[in-house]
Length: 303
Ligand SMILES: Cc1cc2nc3c(=O)[nH]c(=O)nc-3n(C[C@H](O)[C@H](O)[C@H](O)COP(=O)(O)OP(=O)(O)OC[C@H]3O[C@@H](n4cnc5c(N)ncnc54)[C@H](O)[C@@H]3O)c2cc1C
Image 1 (cartoon, rainbow, N blue to C red):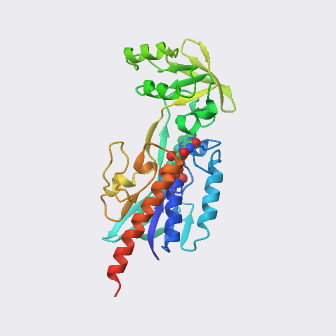
Image 2 (cartoon, rainbow, N blue to C red):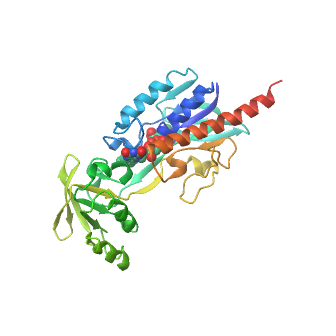
Image 3 (cartoon, rainbow, N blue to C red):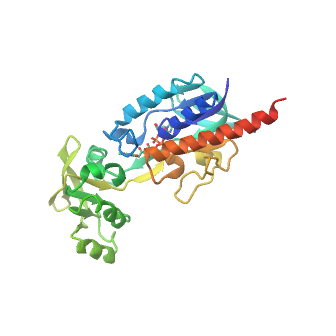
Protein backbone atom coordinates (compact mmCIF):
# COMPACT_ATOMS: atom_id res chain seq x y z
CA UNK A 1 0.00 0.00 0.00
CA UNK A 2 1.14 3.53 -0.71
CA UNK A 3 0.11 6.08 1.93
CA UNK A 4 -0.79 9.67 1.12
CA UNK A 5 1.36 10.81 4.01
CA UNK A 6 3.79 9.29 6.50
CA UNK A 7 4.23 11.28 9.70
CA UNK A 8 7.44 10.68 11.64
CA UNK A 9 6.95 11.55 15.30
CA UNK A 10 3.98 11.20 17.61
CA UNK A 11 4.35 14.28 19.81
CA UNK A 12 1.77 17.09 19.62
CA UNK A 13 2.98 18.16 16.15
CA UNK A 14 2.70 14.73 14.55
CA UNK A 15 -0.51 13.84 16.39
CA UNK A 16 -2.30 17.02 15.38
CA UNK A 17 -1.14 16.54 11.79
CA UNK A 18 -2.58 13.00 11.88
CA UNK A 19 -5.90 14.27 13.24
CA UNK A 20 -6.31 16.92 10.53
CA UNK A 21 -5.27 14.53 7.73
CA UNK A 22 -7.59 11.81 9.06
CA UNK A 23 -10.44 14.29 9.01
CA UNK A 24 -9.40 15.12 5.42
CA UNK A 25 -9.91 11.44 4.47
CA UNK A 26 -6.22 10.85 3.71
CA UNK A 27 -4.46 7.52 4.20
CA UNK A 28 -1.89 8.26 6.83
CA UNK A 29 0.66 6.32 8.80
CA UNK A 30 2.23 7.83 11.91
CA UNK A 31 5.42 6.38 13.45
CA UNK A 32 6.42 7.08 17.00
CA UNK A 33 9.14 5.45 19.06
CA UNK A 34 7.76 7.13 22.18
CA UNK A 35 10.94 8.77 23.41
CA UNK A 36 9.70 12.39 23.45
CA UNK A 37 11.94 14.60 25.53
CA UNK A 38 9.13 15.84 27.79
CA UNK A 39 8.36 12.34 29.12
CA UNK A 40 10.71 13.10 32.04
CA UNK A 41 8.28 15.67 33.39
CA UNK A 42 5.24 15.00 35.59
CA UNK A 43 3.00 17.75 34.24
CA UNK A 44 2.78 19.93 31.14
CA UNK A 45 1.44 23.46 31.41
CA UNK A 46 0.14 26.24 29.21
CA UNK A 47 -2.01 24.29 26.72
CA UNK A 48 -5.50 25.67 27.13
CA UNK A 49 -7.96 23.02 28.45
CA UNK A 50 -4.97 20.75 29.23
CA UNK A 51 -3.03 22.83 31.80
CA UNK A 52 -1.24 20.43 34.18
CA UNK A 53 -1.76 17.30 32.07
CA UNK A 54 0.73 14.40 32.28
CA UNK A 55 2.57 13.90 28.96
CA UNK A 56 1.44 10.24 28.77
CA UNK A 57 -2.20 11.26 29.34
CA UNK A 58 -1.91 13.91 26.62
CA UNK A 59 -0.76 11.21 24.22
CA UNK A 60 -3.51 8.80 25.31
CA UNK A 61 -6.21 11.41 24.68
CA UNK A 62 -4.69 12.28 21.30
CA UNK A 63 -4.69 8.60 20.26
CA UNK A 64 -8.33 8.38 21.36
CA UNK A 65 -9.24 11.36 19.13
CA UNK A 66 -7.33 9.93 16.14
CA UNK A 67 -8.85 6.44 16.55
CA UNK A 68 -12.15 7.88 15.24
CA UNK A 69 -10.56 8.20 11.78
CA UNK A 70 -10.11 4.81 10.11
CA UNK A 71 -7.66 6.03 7.49
CA UNK A 72 -4.98 6.79 10.10
CA UNK A 73 -2.65 4.06 11.43
CA UNK A 74 -0.31 4.58 14.35
CA UNK A 75 2.78 2.38 14.65
CA UNK A 76 5.06 2.32 17.67
CA UNK A 77 8.24 1.90 15.69
CA UNK A 78 11.34 3.92 14.91
CA UNK A 79 11.87 5.10 11.35
CA UNK A 80 15.47 4.34 10.40
CA UNK A 81 15.68 5.47 6.77
CA UNK A 82 13.70 7.58 4.32
CA UNK A 83 14.65 7.27 0.67
CA UNK A 84 13.22 8.90 -2.39
CA UNK A 85 12.29 6.13 -4.83
CA UNK A 86 10.65 8.22 -7.56
CA UNK A 87 9.70 11.88 -7.98
CA UNK A 88 6.54 11.34 -5.92
CA UNK A 89 7.28 8.35 -3.80
CA UNK A 90 9.31 7.71 -0.61
CA UNK A 91 10.31 4.41 0.97
CA UNK A 92 10.68 4.19 4.74
CA UNK A 93 12.28 1.43 6.76
CA UNK A 94 11.78 0.95 10.49
CA UNK A 95 13.68 -0.64 13.37
CA UNK A 96 11.28 -3.59 13.32
CA UNK A 97 12.51 -4.37 9.80
CA UNK A 98 9.38 -3.27 7.93
CA UNK A 99 9.17 -1.17 4.78
CA UNK A 100 6.48 1.40 3.98
CA UNK A 101 5.72 3.65 1.01
CA UNK A 102 4.31 7.15 1.04
CA UNK A 103 3.82 10.10 -1.27
CA UNK A 104 4.38 12.79 1.33
CA UNK A 105 6.39 12.95 4.53
CA UNK A 106 5.89 15.13 7.61
CA UNK A 107 8.96 15.33 9.83
CA UNK A 108 7.73 15.92 13.39
CA UNK A 109 10.61 14.23 15.17
CA UNK A 110 11.26 16.92 17.79
CA UNK A 111 14.51 17.45 19.64
CA UNK A 112 16.75 15.63 22.06
CA UNK A 113 18.58 17.33 24.87
CA UNK A 114 22.15 17.29 26.06
CA UNK A 115 22.41 18.56 29.63
CA UNK A 116 25.37 20.59 30.95
CA UNK A 117 28.15 18.37 32.26
CA UNK A 118 27.00 18.37 35.92
CA UNK A 119 26.90 15.07 37.82
CA UNK A 120 23.37 13.81 38.57
CA UNK A 121 21.58 16.58 36.66
CA UNK A 122 19.31 14.01 34.93
CA UNK A 123 17.95 12.95 38.34
CA UNK A 124 16.43 16.40 38.81
CA UNK A 125 15.59 17.43 35.24
CA UNK A 126 11.85 17.47 34.65
CA UNK A 127 11.01 17.28 38.37
CA UNK A 128 12.61 20.32 40.00
CA UNK A 129 15.00 21.55 37.31
CA UNK A 130 13.49 22.67 34.03
CA UNK A 131 14.54 24.49 30.88
CA UNK A 132 11.47 26.61 30.13
CA UNK A 133 10.15 29.19 32.61
CA UNK A 134 6.88 29.48 30.63
CA UNK A 135 6.30 25.77 31.22
CA UNK A 136 7.25 25.52 34.91
CA UNK A 137 7.95 29.03 36.26
CA UNK A 138 4.51 29.36 37.87
CA UNK A 139 4.97 26.20 39.95
CA UNK A 140 8.34 27.52 41.21
CA UNK A 141 7.19 31.09 41.84
CA UNK A 142 8.80 32.96 44.77
CA UNK A 143 10.99 29.96 45.63
CA UNK A 144 14.78 29.90 46.13
CA UNK A 145 15.92 28.95 42.62
CA UNK A 146 19.13 28.13 40.77
CA UNK A 147 19.78 29.40 37.27
CA UNK A 148 22.43 27.21 35.66
CA UNK A 149 23.81 28.06 32.23
CA UNK A 150 26.90 29.42 30.55
CA UNK A 151 26.68 31.91 27.68
CA UNK A 152 22.93 32.40 27.98
CA UNK A 153 22.87 32.68 31.77
CA UNK A 154 22.18 36.42 31.88
CA UNK A 155 19.18 36.19 29.54
CA UNK A 156 17.82 33.16 31.40
CA UNK A 157 18.24 34.84 34.82
CA UNK A 158 16.44 37.99 33.58
CA UNK A 159 13.55 35.82 32.43
CA UNK A 160 13.34 33.72 35.62
CA UNK A 161 13.37 36.93 37.72
CA UNK A 162 9.72 37.39 36.62
CA UNK A 163 8.79 34.30 38.67
CA UNK A 164 11.21 34.51 41.61
CA UNK A 165 13.60 37.15 42.95
CA UNK A 166 15.40 34.66 45.18
CA UNK A 167 17.92 33.59 42.55
CA UNK A 168 21.47 32.28 42.54
CA UNK A 169 23.09 32.23 39.13
CA UNK A 170 25.63 29.42 38.57
CA UNK A 171 27.93 29.80 35.58
CA UNK A 172 29.76 26.52 36.34
CA UNK A 173 33.13 28.07 35.49
CA UNK A 174 34.73 31.48 35.36
CA UNK A 175 34.57 33.96 32.49
CA UNK A 176 31.16 32.87 31.22
CA UNK A 177 29.37 36.03 32.28
CA UNK A 178 30.21 39.51 30.98
CA UNK A 179 31.29 41.78 33.86
CA UNK A 180 28.61 44.31 32.97
CA UNK A 181 25.89 41.62 33.09
CA UNK A 182 27.27 40.29 36.37
CA UNK A 183 26.98 43.77 37.91
CA UNK A 184 23.42 44.12 36.65
CA UNK A 185 22.43 40.83 38.28
CA UNK A 186 24.09 41.74 41.58
CA UNK A 187 22.37 45.14 41.54
CA UNK A 188 19.04 43.28 41.46
CA UNK A 189 20.00 41.22 44.51
CA UNK A 190 20.78 38.11 42.45
CA UNK A 191 23.79 36.16 43.73
CA UNK A 192 26.36 34.93 41.23
CA UNK A 193 28.56 31.84 41.76
CA UNK A 194 31.21 31.24 39.14
CA UNK A 195 32.78 28.15 40.75
CA UNK A 196 32.56 24.79 39.03
CA UNK A 197 29.58 22.73 40.15
CA UNK A 198 30.59 19.43 41.75
CA UNK A 199 27.09 17.95 41.93
CA UNK A 200 23.46 18.35 42.96
CA UNK A 201 21.90 17.07 46.17
CA UNK A 202 18.32 16.07 46.93
CA UNK A 203 15.95 13.11 46.89
CA UNK A 204 13.37 11.72 44.45
CA UNK A 205 14.08 14.40 41.87
CA UNK A 206 13.57 17.20 44.40
CA UNK A 207 16.63 19.47 44.47
CA UNK A 208 17.90 20.53 47.93
CA UNK A 209 21.26 22.12 47.17
CA UNK A 210 23.93 22.78 44.59
CA UNK A 211 27.37 21.50 45.67
CA UNK A 212 30.31 23.59 44.50
CA UNK A 213 33.84 22.39 43.86
CA UNK A 214 35.09 23.63 47.25
CA UNK A 215 32.33 21.66 49.02
CA UNK A 216 30.04 24.65 49.69
CA UNK A 217 26.35 23.73 49.59
CA UNK A 218 24.03 26.40 48.22
CA UNK A 219 20.43 25.62 49.20
CA UNK A 220 17.99 25.78 46.29
CA UNK A 221 14.70 23.92 45.85
CA UNK A 222 14.63 24.00 42.05
CA UNK A 223 15.56 26.07 39.08
CA UNK A 224 16.30 26.34 35.41
CA UNK A 225 19.08 25.04 33.18
CA UNK A 226 19.90 25.47 29.51
CA UNK A 227 20.59 22.17 27.74
CA UNK A 228 21.89 21.92 24.21
CA UNK A 229 19.16 21.02 21.76
CA UNK A 230 19.85 18.68 18.84
CA UNK A 231 17.51 17.12 16.32
CA UNK A 232 16.11 13.77 17.52
CA UNK A 233 16.51 12.50 13.93
CA UNK A 234 18.64 13.66 11.00
CA UNK A 235 16.11 13.14 8.23
CA UNK A 236 15.89 16.86 7.43
CA UNK A 237 19.60 17.03 6.66
CA UNK A 238 19.65 13.64 4.90
CA UNK A 239 16.78 14.64 2.59
CA UNK A 240 18.40 17.99 1.75
CA UNK A 241 16.11 20.32 3.73
CA UNK A 242 17.41 23.83 4.34
CA UNK A 243 17.77 25.04 7.92
CA UNK A 244 16.34 28.19 9.49
CA UNK A 245 18.34 30.65 11.63
CA UNK A 246 17.88 28.48 14.75
CA UNK A 247 19.01 25.24 13.10
CA UNK A 248 15.44 23.97 12.65
CA UNK A 249 14.07 22.68 9.34
CA UNK A 250 13.08 25.73 7.31
CA UNK A 251 9.43 25.71 6.21
CA UNK A 252 6.80 28.02 4.79
CA UNK A 253 3.62 28.71 6.78
CA UNK A 254 2.15 25.36 5.66
CA UNK A 255 5.13 23.29 6.76
CA UNK A 256 6.58 22.88 3.25
CA UNK A 257 10.35 22.50 3.15
CA UNK A 258 12.47 23.24 0.08
CA UNK A 259 12.29 19.50 -0.77
CA UNK A 260 9.21 18.58 -2.77
CA UNK A 261 6.78 16.40 -0.75
CA UNK A 262 8.69 16.83 2.52
CA UNK A 263 7.07 18.91 5.28
CA UNK A 264 8.16 19.62 8.86
CA UNK A 265 6.38 20.69 12.03
CA UNK A 266 6.89 21.30 15.74
CA UNK A 267 10.20 21.58 17.55
CA UNK A 268 12.04 19.98 14.60
CA UNK A 269 11.26 23.03 12.52
CA UNK A 270 10.91 25.72 15.18
CA UNK A 271 13.53 24.86 17.81
CA UNK A 272 12.15 27.86 19.77
CA UNK A 273 9.68 28.65 21.24
CA UNK A 274 9.17 25.01 22.24
CA UNK A 275 5.61 24.65 23.44
CA UNK A 276 3.04 21.88 23.09
CA UNK A 277 0.36 24.20 21.77
CA UNK A 278 2.70 25.75 19.18
CA UNK A 279 3.91 22.31 18.04
CA UNK A 280 0.29 21.13 17.72
CA UNK A 281 -0.56 24.27 15.71
CA UNK A 282 2.41 23.65 13.42
CA UNK A 283 1.26 20.05 12.92
CA UNK A 284 -2.16 21.31 11.91
CA UNK A 285 -0.65 23.82 9.45
CA UNK A 286 1.59 21.13 7.89
CA UNK A 287 -1.40 18.81 7.50
CA UNK A 288 -3.31 21.57 5.75
CA UNK A 289 -0.26 22.08 3.50
CA UNK A 290 -0.13 18.36 2.69
CA UNK A 291 -3.85 18.10 2.06
CA UNK A 292 -3.93 21.26 -0.08
CA UNK A 293 -1.06 19.98 -2.22
CA UNK A 294 -2.60 16.50 -2.56
CA UNK A 295 -5.92 18.06 -3.51
CA UNK A 296 -4.29 20.01 -6.33
CA UNK A 297 -2.22 17.03 -7.50
CA UNK A 298 -5.10 14.50 -7.45
CA UNK A 299 -7.66 16.94 -8.87
CA UNK A 300 -5.39 17.73 -11.83
CA UNK A 301 -4.61 14.04 -12.41
CA UNK A 302 -8.26 12.89 -12.35
CA UNK A 303 -10.10 12.56 -15.68
C1 LIG B 1 11.19 18.71 30.74
C2 LIG B 1 10.29 19.38 29.73
C3 LIG B 1 9.13 19.99 30.16
C4 LIG B 1 8.30 20.63 29.23
N1 LIG B 1 7.16 21.22 29.69
C5 LIG B 1 6.35 21.83 28.83
C6 LIG B 1 5.16 22.44 29.30
O1 LIG B 1 4.86 22.43 30.50
N2 LIG B 1 4.37 23.06 28.39
C7 LIG B 1 4.69 23.12 27.05
O2 LIG B 1 3.94 23.70 26.28
N3 LIG B 1 5.82 22.54 26.58
C8 LIG B 1 6.65 21.90 27.43
N4 LIG B 1 7.80 21.33 26.97
C9 LIG B 1 8.13 21.44 25.53
C10 LIG B 1 7.28 20.46 24.73
O3 LIG B 1 7.39 19.16 25.30
C11 LIG B 1 7.73 20.44 23.27
O4 LIG B 1 7.76 21.74 22.74
C12 LIG B 1 6.77 19.59 22.42
O5 LIG B 1 6.66 18.29 22.95
C13 LIG B 1 7.24 19.52 20.97
O6 LIG B 1 6.37 18.69 20.26
P1 LIG B 1 6.85 17.93 18.94
O7 LIG B 1 5.69 17.11 18.50
O8 LIG B 1 7.47 18.86 18.00
O9 LIG B 1 8.05 16.98 19.44
P2 LIG B 1 8.06 15.86 20.58
O10 LIG B 1 6.98 16.07 21.57
O11 LIG B 1 9.47 15.81 21.06
O12 LIG B 1 7.69 14.53 19.78
C14 LIG B 1 8.56 13.97 18.84
C15 LIG B 1 8.26 12.48 18.78
O13 LIG B 1 8.95 11.94 17.67
C16 LIG B 1 9.46 10.67 18.04
N5 LIG B 1 10.56 10.34 17.13
C17 LIG B 1 11.74 11.00 16.93
N6 LIG B 1 12.45 10.40 15.98
C18 LIG B 1 11.72 9.34 15.55
C19 LIG B 1 11.93 8.31 14.58
N7 LIG B 1 13.05 8.26 13.84
N8 LIG B 1 10.97 7.38 14.42
C20 LIG B 1 9.82 7.39 15.17
N9 LIG B 1 9.57 8.35 16.10
C21 LIG B 1 10.51 9.29 16.28
C22 LIG B 1 9.90 10.87 19.50
O14 LIG B 1 10.00 9.67 20.19
C23 LIG B 1 8.75 11.73 20.03
O15 LIG B 1 7.71 10.95 20.55
C24 LIG B 1 8.64 20.66 27.85
C25 LIG B 1 9.82 20.04 27.43
C26 LIG B 1 10.63 19.40 28.34
C27 LIG B 1 11.88 18.73 27.88
